[in-house]
Length: 265
Image 1 (cartoon, rainbow, N blue to C red):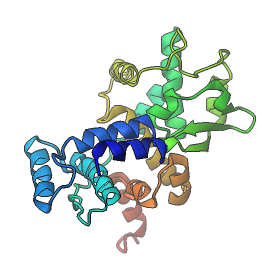
Image 2: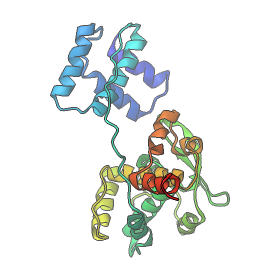
Image 3: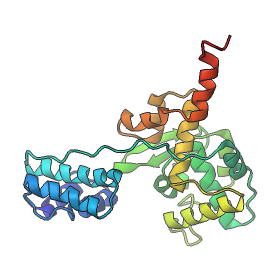
Image 4: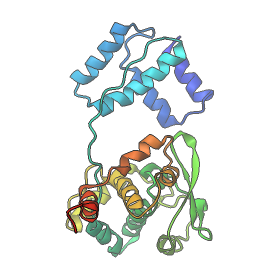
């Protein structure tokens, strides 16, 4: 059994995406032998930690290595590390309002504003947004088709308010394409969104682009949406991933406690 054969089968038999192939390749570089012993696997984890990788990053690599171990017939597995349960970064209501009400003045600003509105309104990943084709929009039924992880397509709803903005798009091809019709680079979007946040008077949240997805999810649940529906909208493969958003923020807990407190008579 070899790394190259594993990658080849994942690529051609399982039809994984190029991004997933790259993930496997990068992860398996931590594995120094193709038939590892228990000692080799422990050494792998130690080397990752010594290099400064956090538990979340380690687990990301461990999942890929475990997939290889299972494929190779090895009985060994690396147990995932305990990850800290951190509060997910989100935008405040006032920050969302500033972003929505911003008045763009040129092509680049209008494109940026539409990206921001799409992320806030649908909760899609930035990679899904930048891959959107105009043909993926069903303006009559308020639905867009997203190409998610693992080349899985899903339809998600969008609002009348977003449709007003989408109706102004007259070009074909990529919805957020460059002037030359090529795909917009994620790093360009990240840079421009951070600059926009600063221009509007607030610091960009941690994990800036993903914070839009977090904000959508928390707001969805806060307004009465179910975790099951949210799972479908976000394109999560398991409900456990979606349940993270069910951990209400501090102000939500405070508001609920004031209503249910036995002392509030």
